[in-house]
Length: 323
Length: 301
Image (cartoon, rainbow over all chains, first blue to last red; front, side):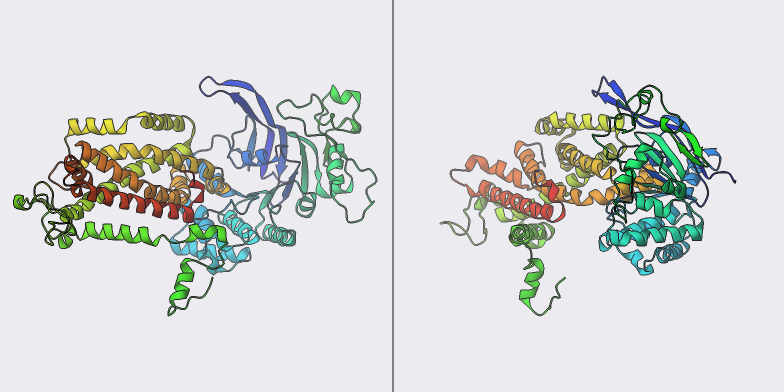
């Protein structure tokens, strides 16, 4: 197996919760991401799933170098990304791009979309004006828009079209990895499939890798080669997508699956309905973080933290049920 | 968008006041014609002052002193709005005075508004210690008695246009900075700013190409809403003797010169007073309309 494109090692992000302006006191730390490790191989899609507040967006922001990790390392093609500056940072920026969830907030309303798409090329002094214009035309065609739409402003586009523009802008510098943070969840169901198919086509053409952050299992199943499930800042289960969907192991993942309406009612034998709220990440439950809501919780779940261990080929679970 | 037939006056009107606008929005959608006409007239007066003024604004004709306006007993068609204690034509002084008021307003808004815009963008975008420092400066500027400071400046630097513009700019910049900063704080949270960073834009580039164009609407609204403030500040300072030195005509100075004769020659002070009222009221109404059109979030200002 070849070396991974992106490697995340023991990543932690703790946000200090402070009080006071001048004489600041630290009240505690929110452990948004706590000891997360995974790999993305070139040209593959990794799905990162979990409910709101589980740390998936924080993880993606650290990979985009928008947040500093508290601990741990992120390596792109074997090179750590912390402390990158100047030219090295510019090279990294060109290799790792992003598309965010909200197409209404991700385009500058005062900028022509052609200029937005060209932005990465302009700041990297990629070529002269004519060369950049040609690349913008090519990108618009690639995402299924018309080249003359480069002269329009974002308010002239629908949500789906805006998301295509955002994708074209992300593709401009020919990145190796694109972080897709809920790329279709703000879109109408009718155009979600179009967008997902467009993303898959582009991956087949360009060989770009995706980090797909989602709370929607259908999207992940359609797109991802490998799936990581997070709960309260920790990975609870990770597996190749086919293997995960064939046999769900962790009770939390089971609960996520139960929350989805299936095509055939009654097919799911063991439904889990979660009760109560997600515990506060300021004071997460000791040992297994899921034991307060887990229907299969055993005494040891509150005492010993279950390590992430492989139960079948490539399929790892952090649960005492599988020891 | 409705198709407008250029030959029809009715459809031209429809363009300015669309029929399908819900009733509640009509008042804000309506173009303030009367203020626009008044502002245009005063601007034209200022620009074409040498062509419009029937007399010199400075030359004294003591023989004709304190003549009332033409419609009163003793008024002369030679001096339509009467003359002051030195026999100078009030109309001509009013016309030239518009010039000074508008030049001061323009320079003070460019200087004070520009500083406020810059401080607001930097404080809002950079944040942290820079933001705290700049905003404490803004707080300090608000606690400063502006008129007193202007008088102090006039004493130390001497009267003149420069002093006046500096004094009024110092009065203006803090309120601009505070509003713009608030706007930038919310813009900074928008995804396109994070994406600009991901694309490789530097902080100055983001402020210039992503933040600045998005606060220009707010800035323009603030400028129009503050024209009135500046004109009144200019008049106040000239009235107090800290503005443009006589005999150059300014509206504030004219009121100051006429105030001692309000009982027998009221027109000397009242006519520039009416001019100030009309101008300030017009720019405020125009500013309100512009705010509703461009940036309704500023409504509480």
